[in-house]
Amino acid sequence: MTAEHSRYAVLFCCMGNICRSPSAHGVLRAAAQQAGLLERLHIDSAGTHGYHVGEPPDARAQRHALRRGIDLADLRARQVEAADFDRFDLIVAMDHDNLEQLRQACPPQLQHKLRLMMSFAPRAGSDIVPDPYYGGAQGFERVLDLLDSACAGLLGHVQAQLRLRELQAALPR
Image (cartoon, rainbow, N blue to C red):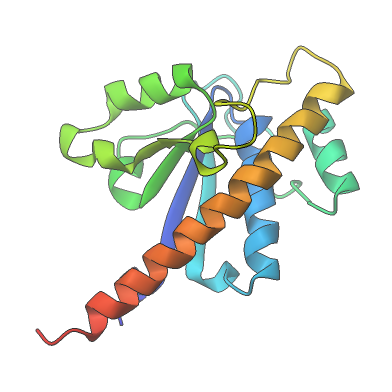
């Protein structure tokens, strides 16, 4: 199997890439590490807007994640770029507004790569990951709770996609 087919690439997106999407990046990275799948994944995050390019995640997001054993300190904000639609297998938006921004920028033949984060946790009680930026500590904890649920479902999706790739690679050509 080629390296291209042995790794699955996931891009998380929110507006500024300093709260929700880097938190999702960290939560999935930790879950993949625990499941022994980290070497099979490429995980990144980006913002639909370039407000915070080059900045680390919001200090509150980092603090709340670190309390759960998730370190976000190595992450830096960037903006979604056109090449991301080719580069990533799955591009996951935190809410409907960001999903719409991605849909407008994404070529028609790659629209199938776009998903809402909470579609991976349909029983979580929310269809979006709300932006905690203007709220208090409770908002950051709620985001992490939602991301925990969604990343569990997402990790199952990734595992299924990796198995499918292995099966396809084993087929005679």
